[in-house]
Image 1 (cartoon, one colour):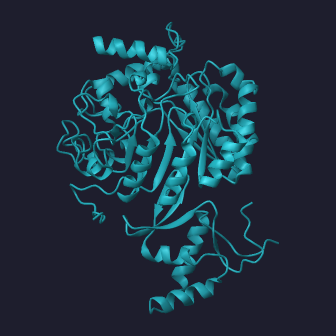
Image 2 (cartoon, rainbow over the protein chains, first blue to last red):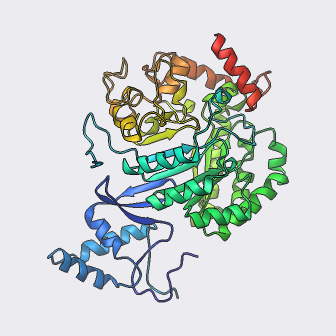
Image 3 (cartoon, rainbow over the protein chains, first blue to last red):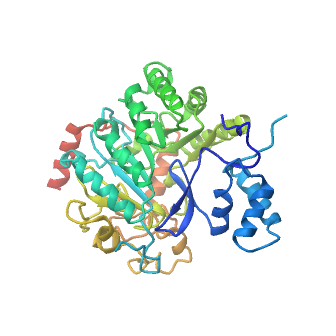
Length: 96
Length: 384
């Protein structure tokens, strides 16, 4: 049921979570049954791009351009690994 | 005008969690119900228009999780209207229900309204214990409702209140949840408030029962892996340090009761000497930041010994104000669950009784929640 779409090339936010900007908290939050995770700015910006249509490389490139930074690859990959462990995102790789 | 206020020492963050107790009406008679024992004295209910305004005011004040609860929230036929408005406002919407009254058409209407999640509770009320354990009528109802939840694409969260009379069947409860396709299962031991306090003698499990149930739950966790996430909550009385109740008084939770009374937790109405505001008379932002009821136990200036000098006071905030009132007779006392409380013996005595091999739950019959009993108990309390 939660398998990534066949067309996914990159990580996708799990359908069990909703990503939303909260004015009152000035933060992106992840909402799920009876719970909430408040995200820091970079976590929010990464998850915002986890829509299945972007590869990890594309996400990194977009973020580097958006924030005028370089060398973000390791940090982004590390965050996505953690997010996968938390089941916030589903991996892109096709299952064997 | 409604600019968010940053949290500070004297200024809490927003009321992130809004619990909308839309009615005290309920088709069930659970002996562990957390509704006030005298709920029948508060029969008037907010109108649809009142609730819509409360939702808008709470959202503007920063609420983001909204739980529709009761009683049985499906008893209100405007539930779909309220859910739709909550969804439109950007709330994550949760319905806490026994499933009684959830038909296919109401489920569809709730789905169309944007409901995000249903928490389905087993309504095992001990009166129906045999029925419940023998998988008959209760199971048929739950199966039908679980099917509706799946058909509408909602995550399946089940909740079962655990107590002395059903804890020995925890394996069957877990298997029932698995069979129904639950993704989350909360096995929450009854805490002793309201109706459950009246029935504490009969409901409190022994330590041996608790340990066995946890052992069995852990074995299922291992065996079932990612298929289902199981949460197990022990009774406060078996702890030696209190919980940080509601994550701190007036820090996160805002409950609005059926008649519009605003509370920092769903049982706070029992506390003496506190005048809680009503959403009919005051807007949510003023209630949250400005009312005496919400400010009373914020910070730590109200604390007494041993809390005042306790190194853990920021960690647990002195525990639960209602438990302090019920067991120590003083809402500003340390929660007697804490073994540093001078009243901790009361908790220890209750536990010792529950653990005694000779203890069979006492001679008193269980008191089931119903409006008639509620009126009797309310009158008795008023005379006292």
